[in-house]
Amino acid sequence: MDRVGERFDGLADLVAGGGVAVLSGAGLSTESGIPDYRGPSGVARRHTPMTYQTFTGDPVARRRYWARSHLGWRTIARAVPNAGHRAVADLAAEGLLTGVVTQNVDGLHQAAGARSVIELHGSLDRVICLDCGFRSPRAELDRRLRERNPWFEAQVTAVNPDGDVDLADERIDAFRTVDCAACDDGTLKPDVVFFGESVPPDRVRQCFAVVEAARLLLVLGSSLTVMSGRRFVLRAAKLDIPVAIINQGPTRGDDYATHTVDAPLGWRCRNWSVGSPASPPCQAHLDMTRCQGYLDGHE
Image (cartoon, rainbow, N blue to C red; front, side):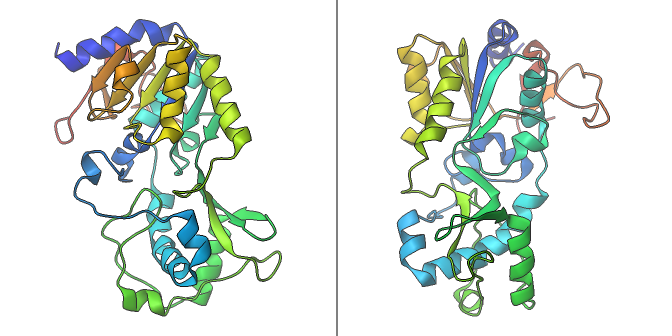
Protein backbone atom coordinates (compact mmCIF):
# COMPACT_ATOMS: atom_id res chain seq x y z
CA MET A 1 0.00 0.00 0.00
CA ASP A 2 1.30 3.51 -0.86
CA ARG A 3 1.74 6.25 1.72
CA VAL A 4 -1.50 7.96 0.68
CA GLY A 5 -3.41 4.74 1.25
CA GLU A 6 -1.75 4.29 4.64
CA ARG A 7 -2.71 7.81 5.69
CA PHE A 8 -6.31 7.22 4.62
CA ASP A 9 -6.27 4.09 6.72
CA GLY A 10 -4.99 6.14 9.64
CA LEU A 11 -8.15 8.25 9.47
CA ALA A 12 -10.53 5.31 9.18
CA ASP A 13 -10.94 4.60 12.88
CA LEU A 14 -11.41 8.27 13.72
CA VAL A 15 -14.11 8.72 11.09
CA ALA A 16 -15.84 5.44 11.95
CA GLY A 17 -16.16 6.64 15.54
CA GLY A 18 -18.57 9.37 14.45
CA GLY A 19 -18.88 12.90 15.72
CA VAL A 20 -17.14 14.29 12.64
CA ALA A 21 -17.49 17.90 11.49
CA VAL A 22 -16.66 18.39 7.82
CA LEU A 23 -15.19 21.65 6.52
CA SER A 24 -15.01 21.60 2.72
CA GLY A 25 -13.37 23.93 0.23
CA ALA A 26 -13.05 24.47 -3.50
CA GLY A 27 -10.67 21.52 -3.91
CA LEU A 28 -13.58 19.18 -3.30
CA SER A 29 -15.38 20.43 -6.41
CA THR A 30 -12.55 20.55 -8.93
CA GLU A 31 -13.34 17.06 -10.19
CA SER A 32 -16.86 18.29 -10.91
CA GLY A 33 -15.38 20.81 -13.34
CA ILE A 34 -15.31 23.80 -11.02
CA PRO A 35 -11.77 25.15 -10.50
CA ASP A 36 -10.33 26.35 -7.23
CA TYR A 37 -8.39 29.54 -6.58
CA ARG A 38 -5.19 28.25 -5.04
CA GLY A 39 -4.88 24.54 -5.77
CA PRO A 40 -3.38 22.83 -8.81
CA SER A 41 -6.23 23.92 -11.08
CA GLY A 42 -5.78 27.52 -10.06
CA VAL A 43 -2.06 27.95 -10.55
CA ALA A 44 -2.28 29.12 -14.15
CA ARG A 45 -5.13 31.58 -13.62
CA ARG A 46 -4.70 35.25 -12.83
CA HIS A 47 -8.35 35.90 -12.10
CA THR A 48 -9.11 38.63 -9.56
CA PRO A 49 -12.34 37.79 -7.71
CA MET A 50 -15.06 40.41 -7.43
CA THR A 51 -15.05 42.36 -4.17
CA TYR A 52 -18.12 43.62 -2.37
CA GLN A 53 -16.86 47.18 -2.47
CA THR A 54 -16.35 47.11 -6.24
CA PHE A 55 -19.67 45.40 -6.91
CA THR A 56 -21.71 47.87 -4.89
CA GLY A 57 -19.76 50.99 -5.82
CA ASP A 58 -19.10 50.63 -9.54
CA PRO A 59 -22.06 50.14 -11.95
CA VAL A 60 -19.71 49.28 -14.82
CA ALA A 61 -17.96 46.59 -12.77
CA ARG A 62 -21.35 45.29 -11.69
CA ARG A 63 -22.51 44.95 -15.32
CA ARG A 64 -19.22 43.23 -16.14
CA TYR A 65 -19.76 40.77 -13.32
CA TRP A 66 -23.33 39.92 -14.35
CA ALA A 67 -22.36 39.50 -18.01
CA ARG A 68 -19.58 37.10 -17.12
CA SER A 69 -21.55 35.36 -14.40
CA HIS A 70 -24.54 34.94 -16.70
CA LEU A 71 -22.43 32.65 -18.84
CA GLY A 72 -20.48 31.06 -15.99
CA TRP A 73 -23.67 30.17 -14.13
CA ARG A 74 -24.60 27.70 -16.86
CA THR A 75 -21.44 25.71 -16.15
CA ILE A 76 -22.03 25.82 -12.38
CA ALA A 77 -25.66 24.76 -12.84
CA ARG A 78 -24.66 21.74 -14.96
CA ALA A 79 -22.02 20.51 -12.51
CA VAL A 80 -22.77 17.22 -10.78
CA PRO A 81 -21.43 15.83 -7.49
CA ASN A 82 -18.27 13.74 -7.62
CA ALA A 83 -17.18 10.81 -5.47
CA GLY A 84 -15.97 13.14 -2.70
CA HIS A 85 -19.39 14.81 -2.36
CA ARG A 86 -21.08 11.41 -2.36
CA ALA A 87 -18.71 10.10 0.30
CA VAL A 88 -19.62 13.03 2.58
CA ALA A 89 -23.31 12.35 1.96
CA ASP A 90 -22.72 8.71 2.93
CA LEU A 91 -21.04 9.75 6.16
CA ALA A 92 -24.02 11.97 6.96
CA ALA A 93 -26.54 9.25 6.08
CA GLU A 94 -24.92 6.87 8.55
CA GLY A 95 -25.07 9.46 11.33
CA LEU A 96 -21.32 10.00 11.58
CA LEU A 97 -21.35 13.77 11.12
CA THR A 98 -22.20 16.65 13.43
CA GLY A 99 -22.65 18.71 10.29
CA VAL A 100 -21.07 20.01 7.10
CA VAL A 101 -19.64 23.51 6.76
CA THR A 102 -18.78 24.33 3.16
CA GLN A 103 -16.90 27.29 1.80
CA ASN A 104 -18.21 26.41 -1.66
CA VAL A 105 -21.13 28.14 -3.34
CA ASP A 106 -21.99 25.41 -5.85
CA GLY A 107 -24.62 23.41 -3.92
CA LEU A 108 -22.99 20.08 -4.77
CA HIS A 109 -23.10 18.73 -1.21
CA GLN A 110 -26.89 18.99 -1.23
CA ALA A 111 -27.08 17.62 -4.77
CA ALA A 112 -25.21 14.54 -3.50
CA GLY A 113 -27.80 14.07 -0.76
CA ALA A 114 -26.11 15.64 2.26
CA ARG A 115 -28.31 17.43 4.77
CA SER A 116 -27.50 19.90 7.55
CA VAL A 117 -25.11 21.74 5.25
CA ILE A 118 -24.14 25.26 6.30
CA GLU A 119 -23.13 27.32 3.28
CA LEU A 120 -20.56 29.61 4.89
CA HIS A 121 -20.27 31.85 1.84
CA GLY A 122 -23.82 31.48 0.53
CA SER A 123 -24.95 29.90 -2.73
CA LEU A 124 -24.89 30.93 -6.37
CA ASP A 125 -28.35 29.46 -6.95
CA ARG A 126 -29.94 32.37 -5.09
CA VAL A 127 -30.06 36.11 -5.74
CA ILE A 128 -30.67 38.84 -3.17
CA CYS A 129 -31.81 42.45 -3.59
CA LEU A 130 -29.49 44.83 -1.75
CA ASP A 131 -32.32 47.33 -1.33
CA CYS A 132 -35.35 45.32 -0.17
CA GLY A 133 -33.68 42.05 0.85
CA PHE A 134 -35.91 39.89 -1.36
CA ARG A 135 -34.36 36.55 -2.31
CA SER A 136 -35.19 34.78 -5.56
CA PRO A 137 -33.94 31.71 -7.46
CA ARG A 138 -30.98 32.20 -9.77
CA ALA A 139 -32.88 30.29 -12.43
CA GLU A 140 -35.47 33.07 -12.50
CA LEU A 141 -32.77 35.71 -12.96
CA ASP A 142 -31.21 33.59 -15.68
CA ARG A 143 -34.55 33.55 -17.52
CA ARG A 144 -34.93 37.34 -17.24
CA LEU A 145 -31.37 37.98 -18.43
CA ARG A 146 -31.84 35.65 -21.39
CA GLU A 147 -34.98 37.54 -22.37
CA ARG A 148 -33.24 40.89 -22.14
CA ASN A 149 -30.09 39.70 -23.94
CA PRO A 150 -31.29 37.15 -26.53
CA TRP A 151 -28.22 37.79 -28.67
CA PHE A 152 -25.77 37.20 -25.82
CA GLU A 153 -23.90 33.98 -26.43
CA ALA A 154 -20.22 33.14 -26.11
CA GLN A 155 -18.11 30.05 -25.79
CA VAL A 156 -16.96 29.56 -22.22
CA THR A 157 -13.49 28.05 -22.03
CA ALA A 158 -13.03 28.36 -18.26
CA VAL A 159 -15.19 29.23 -15.28
CA ASN A 160 -14.00 30.54 -11.92
CA PRO A 161 -15.18 29.32 -8.50
CA ASP A 162 -17.40 32.41 -8.06
CA GLY A 163 -19.22 31.65 -11.32
CA ASP A 164 -17.33 34.35 -13.24
CA VAL A 165 -15.73 33.81 -16.66
CA ASP A 166 -13.33 35.75 -18.86
CA LEU A 167 -15.12 37.77 -21.52
CA ALA A 168 -14.09 40.42 -24.05
CA ASP A 169 -14.97 44.03 -23.14
CA GLU A 170 -16.95 44.62 -26.34
CA ARG A 171 -19.28 41.79 -25.36
CA ILE A 172 -19.75 43.21 -21.89
CA ASP A 173 -20.51 46.78 -23.01
CA ALA A 174 -23.73 45.75 -24.74
CA PHE A 175 -24.98 43.51 -21.93
CA ARG A 176 -28.15 44.72 -20.21
CA THR A 177 -28.78 43.94 -16.54
CA VAL A 178 -32.12 43.75 -14.73
CA ASP A 179 -33.31 45.13 -11.41
CA CYS A 180 -35.19 43.48 -8.54
CA ALA A 181 -38.61 42.21 -9.61
CA ALA A 182 -40.03 42.75 -6.11
CA CYS A 183 -39.18 46.43 -5.59
CA ASP A 184 -38.70 47.32 -9.30
CA ASP A 185 -35.37 49.12 -9.09
CA GLY A 186 -33.31 47.38 -6.40
CA THR A 187 -29.75 46.22 -7.09
CA LEU A 188 -29.41 42.46 -7.44
CA LYS A 189 -26.43 40.53 -6.10
CA PRO A 190 -25.74 36.78 -6.00
CA ASP A 191 -26.50 35.51 -2.51
CA VAL A 192 -22.84 34.81 -1.82
CA VAL A 193 -20.21 36.45 0.36
CA PHE A 194 -17.86 38.38 -1.89
CA PHE A 195 -14.26 39.11 -0.95
CA GLY A 196 -14.29 42.08 1.42
CA GLU A 197 -17.74 41.17 2.73
CA SER A 198 -18.40 39.70 6.18
CA VAL A 199 -20.11 36.39 6.77
CA PRO A 200 -23.34 36.95 8.76
CA PRO A 201 -22.54 36.51 12.49
CA ASP A 202 -25.39 34.04 13.08
CA ARG A 203 -24.02 31.80 10.34
CA VAL A 204 -20.55 31.91 11.86
CA ARG A 205 -21.99 30.94 15.25
CA GLN A 206 -23.77 27.98 13.67
CA CYS A 207 -20.50 26.82 12.12
CA PHE A 208 -18.65 27.13 15.42
CA ALA A 209 -21.39 25.06 17.09
CA VAL A 210 -20.90 22.26 14.53
CA VAL A 211 -17.15 22.24 15.19
CA GLU A 212 -17.46 22.45 18.97
CA ALA A 213 -19.86 19.49 19.04
CA ALA A 214 -17.40 17.31 17.11
CA ARG A 215 -14.74 14.86 18.18
CA LEU A 216 -12.92 15.32 14.85
CA LEU A 217 -12.73 18.17 12.34
CA LEU A 218 -12.23 16.80 8.82
CA VAL A 219 -11.04 19.42 6.30
CA LEU A 220 -11.57 18.47 2.65
CA GLY A 221 -10.05 20.44 -0.20
CA SER A 222 -9.26 23.76 1.44
CA SER A 223 -5.93 25.57 1.55
CA LEU A 224 -7.25 27.45 4.62
CA THR A 225 -5.53 30.56 3.27
CA VAL A 226 -8.19 33.00 4.46
CA MET A 227 -9.37 33.32 8.03
CA SER A 228 -12.99 32.72 7.01
CA GLY A 229 -12.35 28.97 7.01
CA ARG A 230 -9.14 28.73 9.03
CA ARG A 231 -10.81 30.07 12.18
CA PHE A 232 -12.66 26.76 12.58
CA VAL A 233 -9.38 24.86 12.55
CA LEU A 234 -8.01 27.26 15.15
CA ARG A 235 -11.10 26.77 17.33
CA ALA A 236 -10.85 22.98 17.08
CA ALA A 237 -7.17 23.08 18.01
CA LYS A 238 -7.90 25.34 20.97
CA LEU A 239 -10.48 22.83 22.21
CA ASP A 240 -8.10 19.88 21.65
CA ILE A 241 -10.37 18.49 18.93
CA PRO A 242 -8.24 16.51 16.44
CA VAL A 243 -7.98 18.06 12.97
CA ALA A 244 -7.52 15.94 9.83
CA ILE A 245 -6.81 17.66 6.51
CA ILE A 246 -7.08 16.08 3.06
CA ASN A 247 -5.97 18.52 0.39
CA GLN A 248 -3.78 18.58 -2.69
CA GLY A 249 -0.88 20.71 -1.50
CA PRO A 250 0.04 22.28 1.84
CA THR A 251 -2.43 24.33 3.86
CA ARG A 252 -2.19 27.04 6.48
CA GLY A 253 -3.79 24.64 8.94
CA ASP A 254 -1.19 21.87 8.68
CA ASP A 255 0.58 22.94 11.86
CA TYR A 256 -2.64 22.34 13.81
CA ALA A 257 -3.50 19.01 12.19
CA THR A 258 -3.06 15.58 13.73
CA HIS A 259 -3.47 13.95 10.31
CA THR A 260 -2.67 15.31 6.85
CA VAL A 261 -3.09 13.67 3.44
CA ASP A 262 -1.74 15.40 0.34
CA ALA A 263 -3.94 14.01 -2.44
CA PRO A 264 -6.75 14.94 -4.82
CA LEU A 265 -10.21 14.70 -3.29
CA GLY A 266 -11.65 12.15 -5.71
CA TRP A 267 -11.60 8.69 -4.17
CA ARG A 268 -11.34 5.46 -6.16
CA CYS A 269 -13.08 2.74 -4.23
CA ARG A 270 -12.02 -0.85 -4.15
CA ASN A 271 -15.42 -2.01 -2.95
CA TRP A 272 -18.71 -0.37 -3.83
CA SER A 273 -21.72 0.08 -1.62
CA VAL A 274 -25.11 -0.91 -2.96
CA GLY A 275 -26.57 2.20 -4.55
CA SER A 276 -30.15 3.34 -4.07
CA PRO A 277 -32.22 4.66 -6.99
CA ALA A 278 -31.03 8.15 -6.07
CA SER A 279 -27.42 7.08 -5.65
CA PRO A 280 -25.41 5.36 -8.38
CA PRO A 281 -23.76 2.00 -7.56
CA CYS A 282 -20.33 3.61 -7.87
CA GLN A 283 -21.06 5.78 -4.83
CA ALA A 284 -18.14 5.96 -2.44
CA HIS A 285 -18.67 3.98 0.74
CA LEU A 286 -18.07 5.82 3.98
CA ASP A 287 -15.52 3.21 5.09
CA MET A 288 -12.36 5.09 4.22
CA THR A 289 -10.25 1.95 4.60
CA ARG A 290 -11.69 0.90 1.24
CA CYS A 291 -10.58 4.05 -0.50
CA GLN A 292 -7.35 5.47 -1.72
CA GLY A 293 -6.48 8.82 -3.25
CA TYR A 294 -5.92 8.85 -6.96
CA LEU A 295 -4.16 11.05 -9.44
CA ASP A 296 -6.16 12.49 -12.32
CA GLY A 297 -5.89 10.24 -15.36
CA HIS A 298 -4.65 7.22 -13.38
CA GLU A 299 -7.89 5.52 -12.37
